[in-house]
Image (tube, rainbow, N blue to C red; front, side, top):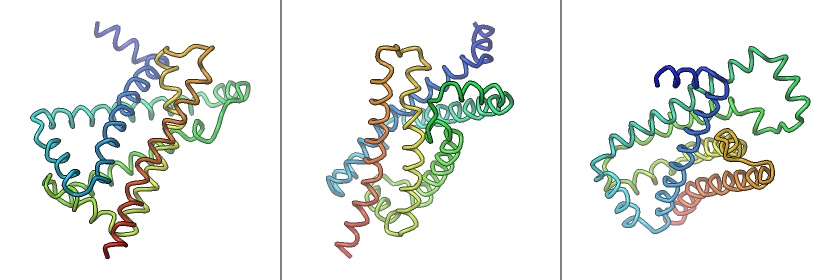
Length: 217
């Protein structure tokens, strides 16, 4: 079993499969995370209640460790595949030229991924540095987006995430072998629309809070 797993991971197809599987898990997390964050539109009490229930989960530490491992594996295999592609650049360039299907999102996956990594690190540091009490969740969010730097850096990070998902969301199902020539275009369109919806949802949060803070002074 271990030898089979190592053989799969050692192949290019196997690495892409792991990338797709962890990417699908990350997308699922983002959907749930966005759903929770959008509760901030309901006001202080509703958002703090959500944060309180979340922090009360007994398996939250295990869940956070699992999410960290998920993102770490995805990033690790992304770097490995990027290095392998760079080493085989003449062949990769020839194949890419024949395919003619490249776009800004697909050709900058490693760079947008690196930008997302920096964004996640800053995001986690911001959360930890502003306290962890669930009852103060609403106030912590307001304090982060009270400053133009907090708003702009968050929006830039989310845009990088959106660019990464614009290509990655559709290619994930293809790498998992769940795609079909007949539905390939539809899967691509749905993936891109999903990326745009996620991006718009996350971007709406700092904009709403910035406008709210401006209104209440």
